[in-house]
Image (cartoon, rainbow, N blue to C red; front, side):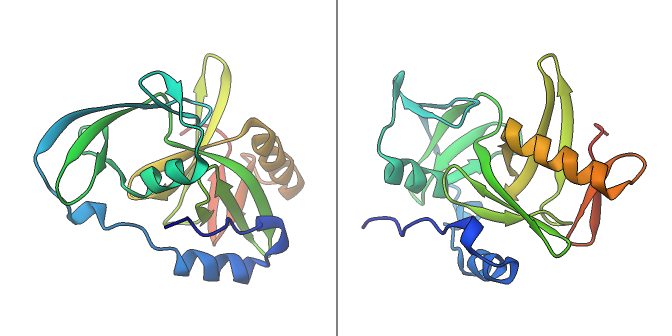
Amino acid sequence: MPMPPLPDLDALSMDEVAAHIAAQSTAPVENWHPSHCGDSEMRIASDGQWYHQGSPIGRRDMVRKFATILRREGDGGYVLVNPGEKLDIAVDDAPFVAVTMKAEGGRIAFQTNVGDLVIAGPDNPLRFETKPDGPHPYIRVRGGLDALIARSLYYDLANLALDGGETPPGVWSGGAFFPLEPA
Protein backbone atom coordinates (compact mmCIF):
# COMPACT_ATOMS: atom_id res chain seq x y z
CA MET A 1 0.00 0.00 0.00
CA PRO A 2 1.52 3.37 -0.97
CA MET A 3 2.17 5.95 1.69
CA PRO A 4 -0.17 8.97 1.74
CA PRO A 5 1.27 12.13 0.18
CA LEU A 6 3.20 14.44 2.48
CA PRO A 7 1.31 17.53 3.60
CA ASP A 8 2.72 20.90 2.52
CA LEU A 9 3.68 22.57 5.80
CA ASP A 10 3.79 26.03 4.22
CA ALA A 11 0.20 25.69 2.98
CA LEU A 12 -1.21 24.64 6.37
CA SER A 13 -2.40 26.86 9.18
CA MET A 14 -1.02 25.97 12.59
CA ASP A 15 -4.42 24.53 13.55
CA GLU A 16 -4.31 22.33 10.43
CA VAL A 17 -0.78 21.23 11.39
CA ALA A 18 -2.09 20.27 14.85
CA ALA A 19 -4.96 18.34 13.22
CA HIS A 20 -2.50 16.48 10.97
CA ILE A 21 -0.39 15.61 14.01
CA ALA A 22 -3.43 14.31 15.87
CA ALA A 23 -4.35 12.18 12.84
CA GLN A 24 -0.82 10.77 12.35
CA SER A 25 -0.67 7.15 13.31
CA THR A 26 2.47 5.24 14.03
CA ALA A 27 2.99 1.60 14.75
CA PRO A 28 2.77 0.72 18.46
CA VAL A 29 6.48 -0.15 18.56
CA GLU A 30 6.65 0.44 22.32
CA ASN A 31 4.33 -2.58 22.76
CA TRP A 32 6.33 -5.00 20.60
CA HIS A 33 8.99 -7.05 22.38
CA PRO A 34 10.14 -9.86 20.09
CA SER A 35 13.50 -11.55 20.44
CA HIS A 36 16.48 -9.81 18.91
CA CYS A 37 17.06 -11.25 15.43
CA GLY A 38 20.31 -9.56 14.36
CA ASP A 39 21.47 -6.59 12.33
CA SER A 40 19.36 -5.00 9.61
CA GLU A 41 22.54 -3.96 7.76
CA MET A 42 20.94 -0.54 7.56
CA ARG A 43 22.28 2.86 8.57
CA ILE A 44 20.79 6.33 8.82
CA ALA A 45 23.42 8.96 7.99
CA SER A 46 23.53 12.32 9.74
CA ASP A 47 22.01 13.97 6.65
CA GLY A 48 18.93 11.72 6.94
CA GLN A 49 19.85 9.40 4.05
CA TRP A 50 19.02 5.74 4.72
CA TYR A 51 21.40 3.01 3.51
CA HIS A 52 21.17 -0.76 3.19
CA GLN A 53 24.41 -2.71 2.87
CA GLY A 54 26.20 0.56 2.03
CA SER A 55 23.86 1.59 -0.81
CA PRO A 56 21.36 4.44 -0.50
CA ILE A 57 17.72 3.45 -0.28
CA GLY A 58 16.18 5.44 -3.12
CA ARG A 59 12.53 4.59 -2.61
CA ARG A 60 11.18 7.36 -0.40
CA ASP A 61 8.01 5.44 0.52
CA MET A 62 10.13 2.50 1.68
CA VAL A 63 12.15 4.79 3.95
CA ARG A 64 8.93 6.33 5.29
CA LYS A 65 7.57 2.83 6.07
CA PHE A 66 10.78 1.80 7.84
CA ALA A 67 10.64 5.04 9.85
CA THR A 68 7.27 3.99 11.27
CA ILE A 69 8.80 0.90 12.91
CA LEU A 70 11.93 2.60 14.25
CA ARG A 71 12.39 2.55 18.02
CA ARG A 72 15.03 3.87 20.40
CA GLU A 73 16.08 1.34 23.02
CA GLY A 74 16.85 2.03 26.67
CA ASP A 75 20.57 1.62 26.00
CA GLY A 76 20.46 4.42 23.39
CA GLY A 77 20.60 2.09 20.38
CA TYR A 78 18.05 1.91 17.61
CA VAL A 79 16.05 -1.01 16.22
CA LEU A 80 13.54 -1.72 13.53
CA VAL A 81 10.83 -3.70 15.26
CA ASN A 82 7.60 -5.47 14.39
CA PRO A 83 5.61 -8.04 16.36
CA GLY A 84 7.85 -10.89 15.19
CA GLU A 85 11.39 -9.52 14.93
CA LYS A 86 13.80 -6.86 16.14
CA LEU A 87 16.82 -5.78 14.09
CA ASP A 88 19.56 -3.30 14.97
CA ILE A 89 19.96 -0.21 12.78
CA ALA A 90 22.92 2.19 12.96
CA VAL A 91 22.13 5.88 13.37
CA ASP A 92 24.98 8.36 12.89
CA ASP A 93 23.34 11.28 14.71
CA ALA A 94 19.54 11.60 14.89
CA PRO A 95 17.28 9.33 12.87
CA PHE A 96 15.40 12.22 11.25
CA VAL A 97 16.17 15.68 9.89
CA ALA A 98 13.74 18.59 10.27
CA VAL A 99 13.69 20.07 6.77
CA THR A 100 10.92 22.68 6.91
CA MET A 101 9.71 25.00 9.64
CA LYS A 102 6.77 27.31 10.23
CA ALA A 103 6.41 29.80 13.11
CA GLU A 104 2.96 31.20 13.75
CA GLY A 105 0.80 32.16 16.71
CA GLY A 106 3.30 31.27 19.43
CA ARG A 107 4.04 27.83 17.97
CA ILE A 108 6.87 26.48 15.84
CA ALA A 109 6.14 23.47 13.63
CA PHE A 110 8.62 21.28 11.80
CA GLN A 111 8.36 18.62 9.12
CA THR A 112 10.94 15.87 8.93
CA ASN A 113 12.54 14.26 5.92
CA VAL A 114 10.19 11.28 6.38
CA GLY A 115 7.08 13.44 6.62
CA ASP A 116 6.45 13.61 10.36
CA LEU A 117 4.93 16.87 11.56
CA VAL A 118 5.75 18.09 15.06
CA ILE A 119 5.09 21.28 17.03
CA ALA A 120 7.76 22.26 19.55
CA GLY A 121 6.47 22.36 23.11
CA PRO A 122 6.73 20.57 26.44
CA ASP A 123 6.11 17.14 24.87
CA ASN A 124 8.35 17.84 21.87
CA PRO A 125 11.20 19.94 23.25
CA LEU A 126 13.91 21.67 21.32
CA ARG A 127 17.46 21.13 22.54
CA PHE A 128 20.78 22.50 21.41
CA GLU A 129 24.20 20.87 21.56
CA THR A 130 27.58 22.29 20.68
CA LYS A 131 29.81 19.99 18.65
CA PRO A 132 33.19 20.61 16.99
CA ASP A 133 31.47 21.67 13.75
CA GLY A 134 29.10 24.10 15.48
CA PRO A 135 25.65 24.10 17.05
CA HIS A 136 23.37 21.10 16.56
CA PRO A 137 19.70 21.80 17.27
CA TYR A 138 17.25 18.92 17.75
CA ILE A 139 13.54 18.43 18.27
CA ARG A 140 11.92 15.40 19.88
CA VAL A 141 9.63 13.80 17.30
CA ARG A 142 8.19 10.78 19.10
CA GLY A 143 9.11 7.96 21.44
CA GLY A 144 12.66 9.09 22.15
CA LEU A 145 13.35 9.75 18.45
CA ASP A 146 14.83 13.13 17.57
CA ALA A 147 15.26 15.11 14.39
CA LEU A 148 18.38 17.15 13.74
CA ILE A 149 17.16 20.58 12.67
CA ALA A 150 18.66 21.51 9.29
CA ARG A 151 21.30 24.24 9.46
CA SER A 152 19.17 26.73 7.46
CA LEU A 153 16.30 26.27 9.94
CA TYR A 154 18.69 26.81 12.84
CA TYR A 155 19.43 30.25 11.40
CA ASP A 156 15.68 30.89 11.17
CA LEU A 157 15.37 29.91 14.85
CA ALA A 158 18.28 32.22 15.74
CA ASN A 159 16.54 35.11 13.96
CA LEU A 160 13.32 34.38 15.86
CA ALA A 161 15.32 34.35 19.10
CA LEU A 162 17.01 37.65 18.33
CA ASP A 163 13.67 39.22 17.38
CA GLY A 164 12.21 37.96 20.69
CA GLY A 165 14.75 39.84 22.77
CA GLU A 166 14.96 37.20 25.53
CA THR A 167 18.06 36.76 27.68
CA PRO A 168 19.46 34.22 27.07
CA PRO A 169 18.33 34.17 23.43
CA GLY A 170 15.69 31.56 22.78
CA VAL A 171 12.31 30.84 21.28
CA TRP A 172 8.85 30.20 22.66
CA SER A 173 6.61 27.48 21.29
CA GLY A 174 3.56 25.83 22.75
CA GLY A 175 3.98 27.77 25.99
CA ALA A 176 7.55 26.56 26.58
CA PHE A 177 10.79 28.55 26.29
CA PHE A 178 13.80 26.96 24.61
CA PRO A 179 17.13 28.78 25.04
CA LEU A 180 19.40 28.43 22.03
CA GLU A 181 22.35 27.82 24.33
CA PRO A 182 23.22 24.20 25.22
CA ALA A 183 22.00 23.11 28.65
